[in-house]
Image (cartoon, rainbow, N blue to C red):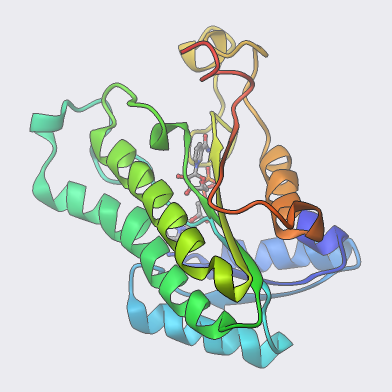
Length: 229
Ligand SMILES: NC(=O)c1ccc[n+]([C@@H]2O[C@H](COP(=O)([O-])OP(=O)(O)OC[C@H]3O[C@@H](n4cnc5c(N)ncnc54)[C@H](O)[C@@H]3O)[C@@H](O)[C@H]2O)c1
């Protein structure tokens, strides 16, 4: 919605096509333009097809937001110590959260060429610090920050800016509602979880010309959670 409010035509990509279509309807209801594309970002042929479909719909794409990701519940690694994580669950986490970002970046950087553009990857506060019982997730998100920095320095000469956002706890289907007594709230100086809109606005700013000298950076949006160590 935030991109659409700025006048952008948006391709909403998801492995859940119904969810992507719902998002497109919200954008259309608000007067914006959007199309839904079905793709699994952990599969290279899906990523390449998604790029083709996006360009077919709107022509050259100049901004990309690599946000698809999964958490510890989906990979059966929630609250597990590192030594308890099954190899297949570790692999699944990396396939989506890290290889997915790698495959998207690879395709996007090639298509942007030397004409410039902006890419934002979603990491997490778990990309900057360890979180108890989430080793696979934390490793995947630290990897996203490494990929972001690598892409930023390798493609700055082409006018492509690559940044990462590191949300704290945001109320989305990934984590669900969080009670006020939960440590995910009580440890946050602002005393609440964030909203998807607060992340979207940061991403939109990073893609805008107002952020023209910003690349290779990681932005926490966590209500102050990491500031206190
Ligand atoms: N919610 C939080 O508190 C929080 C905090 C930090 C980082 N994040 C990150 O933010 C991003 C978005 O998470 P969210 O909270 O909105 O979760 P969400 O589950 O609401 O959204 C994630 C979306 O990614 C899609 N997806 C998952 N695997 C995919 C795949 N292989 N291919 C294509 N699409 C796929 C899902 O269908 C879903 O629509 C994730 O990268 C997540 O790790 C979330």
